[in-house]
Image (cartoon, rainbow, N blue to C red; front, side):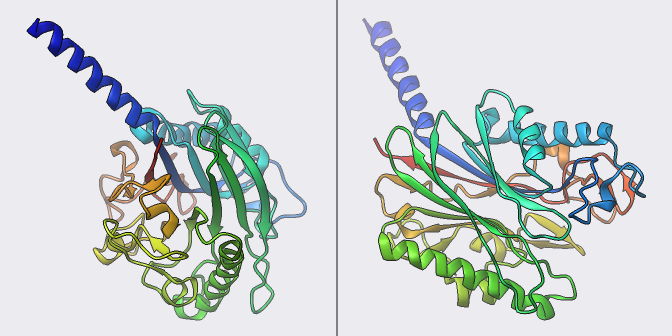
Length: 338
């Protein structure tokens, strides 16, 4: 009788664990560093990544790059892969589609819109069609003060198939710090203002909107673009917040000098996930407290030299090293209430 009772309890425990895993949404973000094809696009300045360039970018190297990226993505979420993952620095829809074909055990749908970026590096997103259906998608144009073309923000609205809950996702790749942080800051402030304006429009329709801001922002959570203009802040996930607030999941890691990108011997927390307070209110879809993480699988970490501990890139300068990306991915988990 005792053995039978223990067996029943064990089955119930396994069943509960399985149910918990099914009720988790895993969201990831990764700047994949120059995922270019080998075809010359006359409308873009893609000359750095062509077979005749100094980098000697060939179809064989493209395949290595795609396989390396797939290895990391398949590693995520305890080997199950993410439910949603956003990307920066991919050249076009075809490259995003080729990456999706490399990923196992998932039925990913690629989402991409061509942007005005002069080099042709865009943002994109993959979602599992067995978990979500797409409701809406459109690019949001950022008009910089000097009118230089830059990447659009990609808005993607997904509906969860089991609950019908809507996730409103903004995929970002804000202007770089080229020319220095202070000189270029106005461009990222402009991006923050553009993004905030769109978010306010969503809040005006639904103050409980589920919103995820995700991407490579090229700024830290403590920079003015975030604190003053985007109005995304640190938070205690055990405290349920007021409506229409933005909560920065990477804030504490940034303060603790952790990061996703190693530059000049310093860690930068520029790959971030920000959520609306509706995703931390204890209802429906909810952030799993302290689940935000920087993913650093051993196989993509540089083991020696002045970039020790950083992510192994595809190139170091013009020297091909056949790595992954110069950024580590970040990810967070969300629980879905039945």
